[in-house]
Image 1 (tube, rainbow, N blue to C red):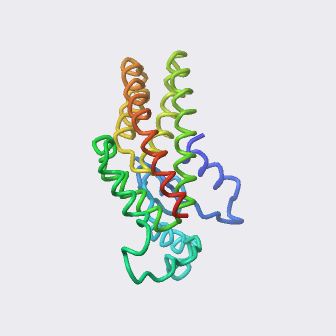
Image 2: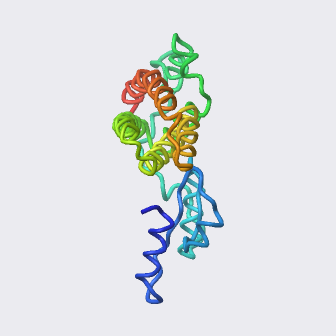
Image 3: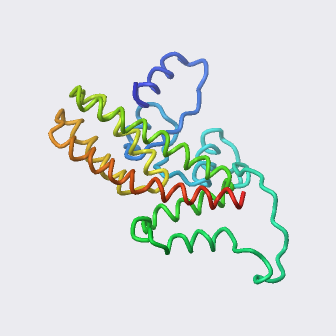
Length: 224
């Protein structure tokens, strides 16, 4: 079931005895529809840490949570007294990599900005793991989409495309997210006429993106 149906079922089971806070987190939802379904708040992907903290605070009737509540503790680096006396920083190496041969393929500002934000909020090691999970899950989703398209299962294609779109949007991979949006819309209309072309574009973008993400993962792990 989707989030709206799930919320309705949770509220039905709760009756008037309790109220579980529910926050919608979606790439293309409708705020009013989510609130009408019984959700307490709504966040659009990619989710910003302070926005999430504020939403939790509103749901729990708490004073606004400081950003640090949702931060992963990380050891502070030692003070540096001379740039030339130390190896390149993580940011310097990432920037240098982005200006290399793959600059055109990895020039999407949203991806760079999202990785920088996640690195600041969660630390390099967590972001590296997040990238690896994205690559693994995306490969599995694309395999499923190809199978579902062959079966002409428009409902399942719609659901899978929606999930993949959310993952891509959360990492700032806007080109893949846009194709997923087109695929989802077509499947929702009950047609899979252009599915083969959409999947071909998704496969191309993903293969183009993988080595670039892996190179960032290696850099991030060196600075964990």
